[in-house]
Image 1 (spheres, rainbow, N blue to C red):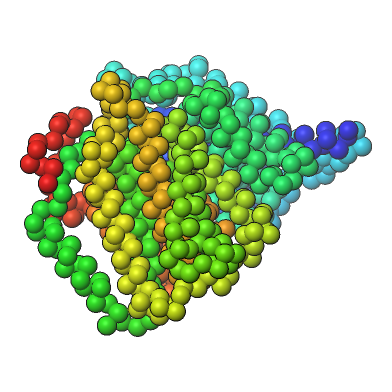
Image 2 (image 1 turned 180 degrees about the vertical axis):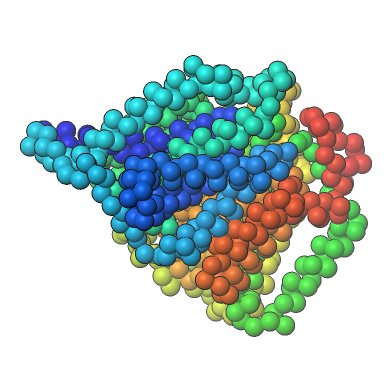
Length: 624
């Protein structure tokens, strides 16, 4: 019994740490609608700066002063980022702010390595809390007891701030209806800056408090950001109380899950999130926000390529097809990988742009396709083409099952539920060693002799990618595509005309998952192996970045985004040890210069016309 009490207290300490980070993210999203992917980077900076201050200046400002000073410094950096970067792109579709913060995360990761080095750093013990306290015969670190007290204390202070001050009242009002707050004459710019700085302060304080518990390293940002998103979504976006409750639930399940459910301990929090969202679509204490500007983009009227656009596309395809006659095997392999990710990004772009559904777990279908092809080769002995069909089928089947649950939600909640299912699939692949090989992967997945040479496989990848993009475009301009866009623009109006929202979006997710599965199956043959990473969060994020970088609302955007992002990633890794720093700076710069994505450059080849409200009925001649 005493052991379980100690484990429970450890969970409470972890809950307090998680709450500090999660409530900051919840506050920021609730007011500014920024999906701040860089929140973990600020958490990491808080830890690194606190470590430096505690090691070098503790004599002047003390250990606790070092932690508080570090949080203030990082909060000031956050305010600077909001003022200089995010404020310049508030007029862009909201997800482009996620792209900017992702680029910022890449930069901070490499900057941390440059400044503090790649080794783990062990900070000093907190004065007065270096030992342990015996509770029912079990030694519980005294620092954990401090954190247990600190979490509710911060929660109480935030409650007083939001309920007893004018700033807090404005923040709560903006969380519910920020357009109304602006109409009342409140300066949204400074309100957003203040809220962003407060959220970053809490994240940095959470990171600073870890230097006496864990080693500080340059990977701690990605480790914490996923857990933070899970806590925020379970609790309800914009709800500090929800974040506190969700942090308790997640931390305690993590503490006891490894004892009670060791086989699923690594995905237990995702299972909890999936169950909560299915029962409570807006989280435990969340509520439906008032309508704001679209998360995706303004409604647009699409039309097929103009004559000049068709000629340009044909010329590009011919030039790409002639590459094997002018470049070596290495560049053909790189080109094949880019083409595969063009198809992967196009499938996600179809879901996001045409369907209005943002997926954080699209890698699930990509990875299922890869494993389906690998299993067809290794276990069934099938050749290349039938194995590709098996991988595509498995990706489609995954989309059928996952989509049935996910289309009941919308917005960020839909995105996080797709992430939850993707992590569940990842865990199955990681732990089902007898079938998937686990972390060792599945090796020896090579194409048939006729497609084994780099130039032949390149042409195969080109044919598959080109065919997939063309088919997706045909679906966009089909009657189903128009129904899907009607649901995207106004679900209520679409349902009033007899269009079933969930069925239509479910079909769209199945289509997107099928093409993503095909891309994954082809990727398995390119690499000759499959590992669980193909199902991981990083693959989903890569696809999301490609779509956002290319531009939502432009049909060619995902193609351009995939080419630019993958080419830059591969090139920079081979040229510099700080590829993330350069790539992140390029992404941030492109977001600022092209807030609508790179696809806006090619929009002149299509008859695209942005509008301010719902799209009017297309004229017959625009249907092509």
